[in-house]
Every structure is written in C-alpha cells, then in structure tokens.
Image (cartoon, rainbow, N blue to C red; front, side, top):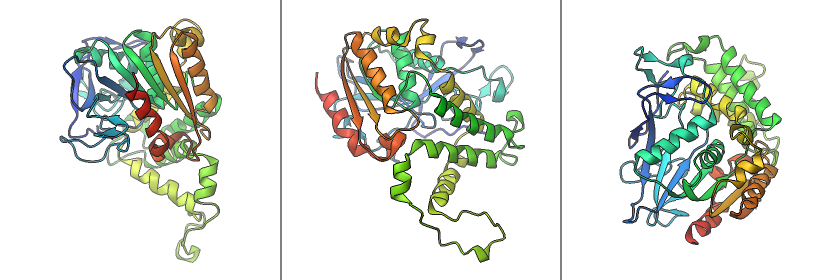
Length: 371
C-alpha cells in the first residue's frame, strides 16, 4: 500500500477539519496539483483540470517533469490547451493515491495509513477540495473548468456548489449520474478486489497484495472504456501465437483481445492503490447532481452561472452514453449558457479523449480561442 506521486507535484493544504459530505472530517489533508504555463498580469487566464478515476496531476510534460503526461497530446505550447496562453492547474482528486489525501495516506491521528478508516467519499468532496485548492492558490474566478470522465462529474459538482467560480466549462464524456450498466460493472470491479483473500479488508501490503482482484477489476474496466466496434476492428477473432501444448493451463488466453486486457491490467496493477480504487469507483456510482443540490438535475445545471460551455460526448461510449452529454448540454442551455454540443464519431468509446485526441483537439482549441 503506497502513494504514487509524480516528481513535479505541488501541494495545497486543505482547511483543518475538512468536512466530508457523508460525515467525518480530515485533518492535515492536502491536494496534489501541477501547474503548467504562465499566469498573466490580470490573473484571469487560469484553467482548472479535473481528472478521471486513475489519473494523477501530471497531464503533460513540462520543464519540471519532462515525462509524458496522461493528456500529453492536448496540453503544451501550441497544443489545443495552449500553455503559451493559459495557466493550467491540474489537480489529483481527493481520495486518490497520486498525492492527494486518500486511503493510502497517513492518518495524522494514528500515524498509520487510513485504509478503510478514510471517511466515506463523494464526488461533492472532490469538488469542494478542488474549490478550496483554487482559493488557496489565490484565484477567485477561473477562465475555464475542464473535466474528463469522473472529472466531468466533479466539474459539474464544483460549478453547482460554487456558482461563479468559472466563466466557462468544457465537459468531456461526463454525466450527471451513473447509469445502471455503469454501476453494475463498477460493482463487479469492487467485488473482484474485495473477494481477493489478500485484500484482507484493506489491510494488504506489497508482499500480500490483492493481485488477482486488481487484475480482474482493471480488465472489467477496460471493457467499458472502449467500444464493441473497436474490439471488432482492432482484434476480430485473431489468436495469439501461444502453443497450447506448451502450457499446463487449459484456459490460458488464446485470443489477442485477451492478451491485450492481460497486458494492460498488469501495467496498471502496481500503479494504483486498491482501496483508492474502491473509494473512487463507489463515489462515482453514488453521485447524482440534482439530489446533491437538493433540486432537479435541470435546475442544478441551469443555475451554474456560466458564460459558455463545450459539451463533448462519444457516439460509441457505452460507459457514459452520448445521451448523457446531450442532457448536460440541454440543462446548461436552459439557464442561458451559450452551449456547443459536440458528438464525436470515434470507434474508441469512453476513452476516446485519451486514445483518439485528434478528434478532440480542434474543437477544444477553437472554444478556448474564442472570447
């Protein structure tokens, strides 16, 4: 059990006794972030990025950390989110294991890691922690909030709970709540981890680690992050070169798609804390924008006080289907926000914003360059 903190990570302390939505408080908590670009004299060129479940605060390479980031194609000098023009702050979500306080962090009250003693986490807590980070950095109003996947949920919660915190918003593959299909798959992911005997109710270590549970959970996740069209076009029924006579395992992976899932899951295996995976996936399922605002979803969206917004969805997304982004755009528009809704035709499903960036870059660049 450990944290995985990129070398250029900076930190902001959360207010002492940070209150969580479902009860409990955090003491000595922090949020990890990275900043790229240059702040202008008016301090009005700040973009906040809120990330998906497994991303850290390192979105792209820069002088302090030249390694590629998780959104490398999108951020940097001359790129769609042009750091020659914008000062970009990317935060790691509260509850993660990439620098922000979460289950893998040390509880200052005990000197031990929180594990399952970490308070119940909600998207609203992630949003409030992001707002606290913005204010701690000295910014009252952002030029834009960008959220991707879970981060798009967090962005909507931020904008609803802190009206006026941003002038504009880019929502990428987001939703106002999870649908039953998504909840079902994430439930199976959590079950795979919890049923691994080495999970031991969160008390694992490097030697006794829920390896099989994490591998299965990540494979299930990958199935939902891509689309049936991509699986068909990329793999079809192609088989591996494995000779079944050379193994004693009768059900070893035989198709290339199985090998892809296996190799991807192994890359993820030791780079994310299992308890953080449980907390973050569960808070996605629990989120409901209207319910959290004590209103309807439409009322929550219409009251966000935005000048304009770009809402992007992917036609082949099975995790957050396109109709969910359409609903976001309609709700924002009903409140007077100038909204552009963009359905992206990509075979790569929910993860298209990562794996097919050329379809996202031009509209994002245009949105940020106008007004």
